[in-house]
Length: 213
Image 1 (cartoon, rainbow, N blue to C red):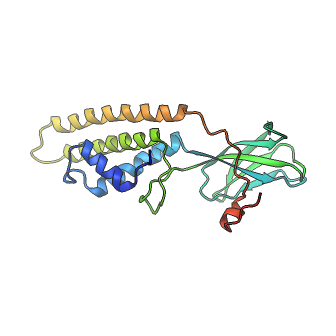
Image 2 (image 1 turned 135 degrees about the horizontal axis):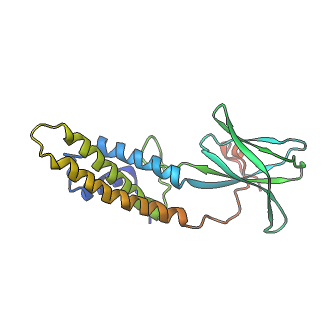
Image 3 (image 1 turned 30 degrees about the horizontal axis):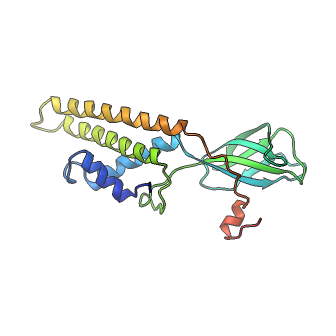
């Protein structure tokens, strides 16, 4: 299934809420989608991998992907399908992600660096691609409806001539969608990650549209 664009998500969210953009405007729904996306990126970001050439005597390496949100594994590429875990710690300096090896590797070594990237939704904040799996696409819908219900509850608390039970009812509805959201995130987190070989191109190769074998 092709993941939804922002426009498609907004239409689905408004349909779930039986709204014609009167109670839940495009701006309100977009804000809810952005909040749901932030939760998704905390719970189940994209998992990426690249290879880097070892530098003799060097312990510190920069992950030169400005969109990266964290490093979660560094391996030494072995022969065949055998890779070896390396002891390292990751840190952030001046907004850039680095890792420091306990033991430096020779220049003949190839390091495999696993890291996370945020998901994007086509049409949201300048993104041109939706990167969700099927499960995360469902999570984005559920989470966005949840945040829309919270917004509606807050909007009715101090409104004149609104029955006292209206905000409570919106909160109850939000709770239902929150449970759905958490269930979707749980299923997405338990999906097995990709086990394919990391991309052999470096960040610099990608920047210059050149891929070396």
